[in-house]
Image 1 (tube, rainbow, N blue to C red):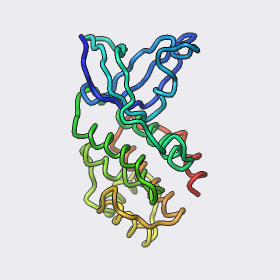
Image 2 (cartoon, rainbow, N blue to C red):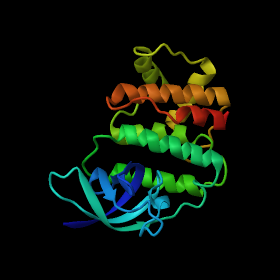
Image 3 (cartoon, one colour):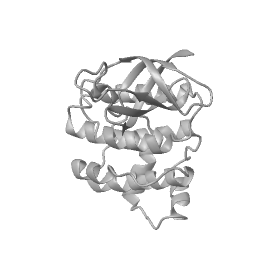
Image 4 (cartoon, rainbow, N blue to C red):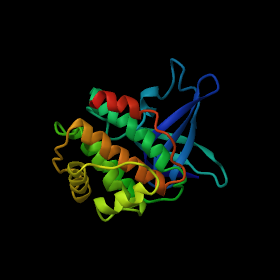
Length: 229
């Protein structure tokens, strides 16, 4: 049966000589895997660029009961990004977020239109933002906790939880910035330096690891730190 849904590409793996299996977070079905045949051929109907991480798609898809891999009938990029793939800071943040979402959304196999809308609209906002976006990933992670059901009440709560599992302490100035981060939305102008940025991200990742059993090492984290340092 065919269904219309929006989707966000989280990643893909090669399958056979010319095909891909693509991980997509969909508005209607949560996390889904789709196979696209012949995409790595020169005359492919759909180019590889369509399946780059975080690409926003309008889809018509097949959905078979008890099938772990389905197919896409129609694919349209909507809206196309103007800046994320082309600016080094934005693309590095994007690669990190795609890997992060691939971890944290694993197992989300039911529709959650509110969370999908937040992620979709946040990525669109990030793409359109012309300046002051270097801390977007921190703000996004802080806000996403609301939709996943474990939003902390503030810096004290998050540090109490994290300190039980990880030997990490924040300086007073970093605690103030963590509270500031948790208390404001994506549009807030958060002023922090590189060291504070790394520490706050470390705390947020540890916090997510506590609340998600599917969370493992994020390979893109080292590159992100290098680009933002």
